[in-house]
Image (cartoon, rainbow, N blue to C red; front, side):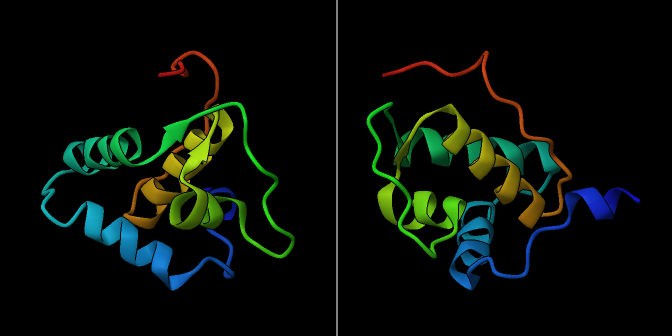
Length: 102
């Protein structure tokens, strides 16, 4: 039943799966995979409230991770959830407390 709620949509880019595998390639435990993903987001994406709309026809998370690399809490939380699920973790999206601007 959990797969029903944690399955990723079929339209996600192969580039996104490749990115998730690349980020976690040296991690040998779930903890290290998750911390590698979080570190990637911290160092490669910029927190901002001033974002452009996601272009029509583009997937929200793919656009954030592969193109704009700018966003606010929802962007980071959604990206983290999708990346975690791509490497075998069934994470939930949580937004709020941990968000802060740089």
